[in-house]
Length: 128
Image 1 (spheres, rainbow, N blue to C red):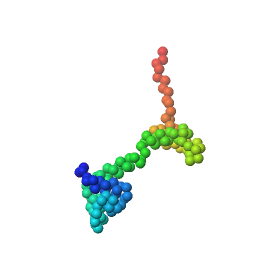
Image 2: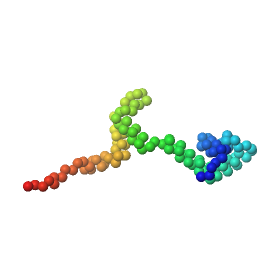
Image 3: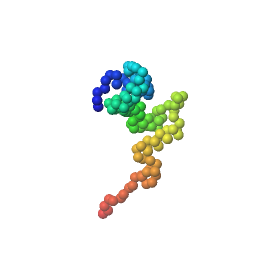
Image 4: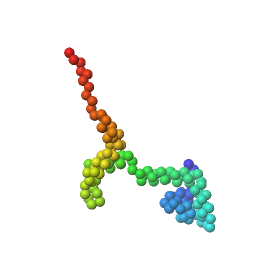
């Protein structure tokens, strides 16, 4: 990826923050009556586009929970460790729902458990 100038980097960062290319150009220090054109051109430059895409991925990855975080949350709810907004324990239906969500993710859905998914005892010991 091509190295961006400090003004281009500032433009991209402001654009990510504001979502408005013209305002991002103004805040980044671009001058003149053609800020709309400058902003539009900046958004088509490959280096700036790549920088914006990479930064957006970083931002999104911080916002979106990982599967491990989801599993920890469901486990905490199921165990009754999570309180509601009134500091009351989670209701039993919520704890059961969290347990079901965990089971789905652990591939131990009710279907698999109910259709003979138990222990099968095989007596194959030799007889004398």
